[in-house]
Amino acid sequence: MLFIHLHMPKRLFSLALTFFLCIGVNAQNNYPQNYFQSPLNTSFSLVGNFGEIRPNHFHAGFDIQTNNTEGMPIYAAADGYISRIKISAYGYGNALYIAHPNGYTTVYGHLKSFNSTIQAFERKIQYDKESFEIDTLLSNEKLPVKKGDFIGLSGNTGGSQGPHLHFEIRDSKSEFPINPYFFGYTVDDTIKPRITQLAIYPLNNFATINGKNESKKMAPIYTKGIYSFLKTDTLTVSGSIGFGIECYDTETKSTNKNAVYSIELQLGGKRIYYYEMETFSFENARYVNAHIDYPNKQRHDTKIQKCFLTKNNQLGIYKGVFNNGVTDFNDDSVHWVKYIVKDYLGNTTELMLKVKSHRHDPINVEQIINNQKLDCFKEFKLEKKNITITIPANALYDDIKFKYDNSTAVKGTFSPLYKIMNNEIPLQKAYSLNILPEKLPDSLQSKACIISINDKGKKSYEGGSYQEGFVKTQTKNFGNFAVAVDTIPPKMKTTFPLQKNMPVNLSKAKTIGISVSDNLSGVRKYRATIDGNWVLMEYETKQNLLYYTFNDKISKGSHIFKIDVSDDKSNLSSMQFTFIR
Image (cartoon, rainbow, N blue to C red; front, side):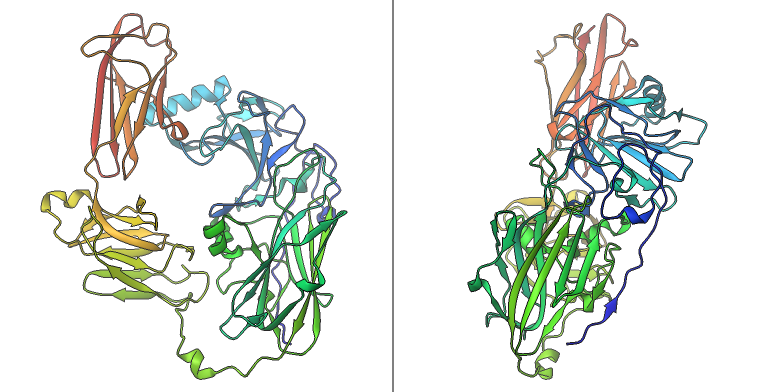
């Protein structure tokens, strides 16, 4: 059995933080404590922790409970200055970044609002740029803060799925997020990680599991705190085999399924795979799709972590891996596979599985040659009369067989339906897709786009524009594609009743709310004015709501409100009405 030792160098960072003394499995990393305080003046409990597997990324910090409410005071974790203010309808929503003199930056996301000084500074930028969404970098003299200063209120803005504070710590130079556990933050946790299932994979056409060339999933038995398998669960394996595990961690008195800190896989008492969640780069966070069993995620919404590395996996979380975690079973022996799963505080769960190995037949070289795959490290281009597909180097996570087909056009589209791979194959980078439209009127060329259509017939916008006779786009999805057009403008409706040609009484109203929706390409731009002057409309995408909050600048009397909303294909909707303050 041949193993190649691949050792990923550990990145060490230095940061001080004051909160709780944390004696975890990584106390030896010598991270100074006594520097940062808690951003909340409440008990510390998590609804999400560092390294959780999220769609297309790892979670980069702590999601701290705010009792499922908005409006809890948030405090600066240490002295520093506001180095960045970012307002977005997506992601972290209303977010503040504080740079600290020790070389680290703390991030506070999904805030409802900022303190009065920061809010006034942010509002001026928004009105100067006439934009709700801003991303502004600040110098150290603009907005200094002291440790414990009130900086804002917790909220539910951006991509948040419920009220909480997103808190993270980054290295200011590299911007790598670092697990806050390393800096003294801890929670009440005496519960061992939970294991829900193991997965075993044949990694080529010649590998078998119980005589079949297909993967197998197994759920362990949990009895009195111990995980085990029945004797009848012993597997017979042959050839190149990989293992995977689905597991999670939870706190004392909590049911939230958070990420584990480390996973180790041993074979015959020797480590063949290990990772731990200390830090990663945002640039490589999408490689989470190489880390997990992506097809199973797509089919069953599972989070099975593969304990072997695909050819193109550039995550920096792996600390010691032999032969990419792949085992070649080619003897007539019994082997013990052991998993060791830990949370940061050292609570440990172990699970062992017995496998029987048997020798496999010699590999047929000619058959391998006849099953050549695309090299994920090289560019691939398919160029036909009606379609061009260009997949750049390093876009795929592994070598794959390219599959492509087409069928008759779907009603309402302007091209055949092209099937490119399937949606169970993930991509790290976007690839170019150019489709020649059929019977597309010249008048609709500016409205042309490419859509994807799933197996249930749902259409999704993939962007694109008409160029040189083709509709061209970049996408990170495989599936079924066609040319379509978007000629329908967004829909708008006030959150209060309007009567035609009659002013509406808003003298007691706090806001002007406009519900917005779009049928395909999505809301792209919006602009509102009162009496011809630009006003700030905040965008709450979870409610499809644009809203203006009244201030003292709107005097009593009659005013004209106007709003324009356009989608990504420049289809424009306008609304105007008179209101009384």
